[in-house]
Length: 323
Image (cartoon, rainbow, N blue to C red):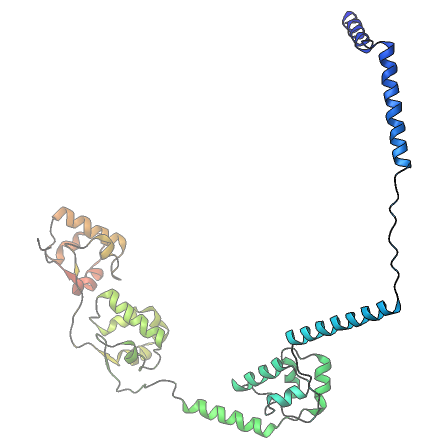
């Protein structure tokens, strides 16, 4: 290690002393000359003299006139862009249920506030007491206190208006018809006819039609018990008998389920068949090749006798016709 360090020191000494004494003297002279030139240039650098502007009274007057012209142009542009009419405030007694828009604006309300008040009245709203004005959008406390001494509400007119609205509501029939003798054919009735029955609105009428399409057609009035939307109307036997008494079925016409040709997906869409039952019928058809009668379905454990009886009107055992 000592030998290596001594070798490194000798190498540095040889690098330093590669220059002779005359060469080192020349380097120092160059450094001194460069420093002197830098100092001289910095000392004798010419100074920038800023021009002195002499203003006279005429120049000041001209500038003031020009500035006034520019201000007037800016004001004219601002008024054109943000045009508004100056309205003199005129405090007077007013009825918020009868005052027109110009009266409300002259009382200090903004035009959009007056418009909102008129829209509220047009929709049937009324100001029954002065505190109701606080609900007007943009109505501040100071504005409300300023208007409070001038508010006069005609309570008799409010009572007459309330009675007229109540009489108009009572005159409108809640149902088109709910007579006992209204009887509809459940197989062909549309939504308009179904809504003639008390308790059946648009939603329930649509649900009845939808369930009829899923079944392929009603075969009994009792099937209305299976419509979930009608469950609230079937609370007891009296209400059930009342609802069912409005319907009859003239003939049994259904869209049959062709068990020998339909796939599992089509079979399980029927409300009386689950996926497991539709799959079992499909597998039985594959084993038997062809299903000919209802008794063959009794061999399936997933189908009860009640299920079979419900499916009886909808099953068709016709063989798929070959092209």
